[in-house]
View 1 (tube, rainbow, N blue to C red):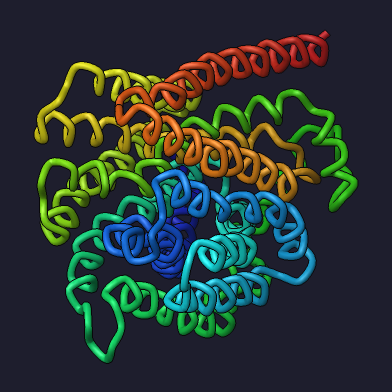
View 2: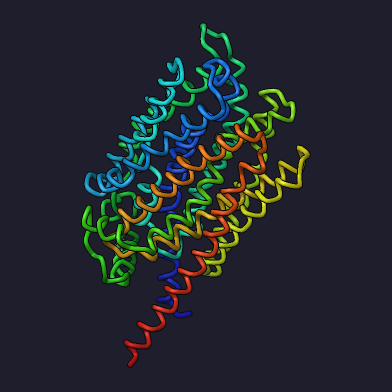
Length: 445
C-alpha cells in the first residue's frame, strides 16, 4: 500500500469514527424512547385492560390504530424533513409524541384509548424513516449495514430495559391517586420531550455544515457521498411528491414493503401481546417484565453481529432472507412447544430474526432507490410495512386469539407473510443483479 493510500484510509477511518460517535449514540437514545413510548402499551395492558373493561379484540384494535395514522402521515413527514431539515423536524416529532405519550395517562375508556393511540401514531410518524434518510446524508454505503443495525438495536434494547422498568412503574400503583399504568405513560413520555429539545440544538443537518469535523474530514466525506449519489440509477430523479407518485407505480417498491411487513409484524405483535402471553404461565407483573426482556437482550447482541457480518462480506440478500425464515421457524415452533423455557427460546428466535433483518434490509433498500426517490421510498416502505405489520396483524392476532384461545394459531398468518417475504427479497435481488450485469455488458460493448 502506498503512502497516499494509507493516508486516505487513515482519513476515512478517522472521519467515520468521528461521525459515528457524534450521531449514533444520540440517535439511538432518541429511538429507544420512541420504542418505549410506542410499545409501553403492552406492559400497561397488564393493568389497563381490566381497569377500562376492554376485551382482547378491543385492546388489539386500539393498539393497532397507532399504525393507521402512522401510515397516513409517514410520507408527508419524511418529505417535510427533507424540506425543513432533520434538526428542526426530528425535534418537532419527538416533542409532539412525548406529550401525547404522557397524555395516555388521561385515557378513561375505550373511545379515548382509540383516539390517543391514533394521535400518537400521527405524532411519531416519520421518525424512523426520517432517521434512515438522515443517516444516508452522513454514511457512505459501506458503513450503512453495521451502523443501521447499531441504530436498530434501540428497538430490542428499549423493551429489554422497558419491560422490567414497566414492571417497576406498575408497582407505583396508588401513588398520588394514580394507577401504575398511568405512571408508566407519564414517566416514559416526559424524557422524550426533553430529548426533543436537545435534538434541536445538537443535530447538524448536512456534512458540509459540520464544524465539529476537521476541514479535510469534511471534504473527504462530502466527496465520497457525492460520488455515490452520482453512481445511483439515473431514472426517477424527481424529488418530493413527484418521486412518490412514481414509487406508487413501482412493483419492486411494493414488494420491498411486503417483505418488510413480515419482520414488522413479528416485532410489533410480540411487543403488544408478548407480556400477556408470558403472564399466562402464572407469572406476576414484575416477573413478566423480567422474563419479557430476555428475548430482546438476545436480539440486541445478535443483530449487531449480523449487521457487521453483512458489511464485512458485502452480502445483503441472504442476510435479509435468512432472518425472515428464522421468524417463520420460530412461529411454527409454537405449535409443538408448550413450556415456558421453550416459549422463551422461540420468542428469542423470532425477535432475533425481526431485528437482525433491519440492517441488511435497509442497506439493500437504500441502495436500490434512486437519489431522488430515497426520502419518499424509505418512508413508503416503512409506512406500508407498519400498516400491514402493525395495523393489520395486531388486529388479526387479537381476533384469532379471542376466537380460539390458541396463541400458536394466531401467529400463523405472520409466519406465512415472512416466508413470502424471504422469497421476494431473493427474487428481487437476483433481478437487480441480472439487470446490473446486462447494463455493464452493454456499456462494455
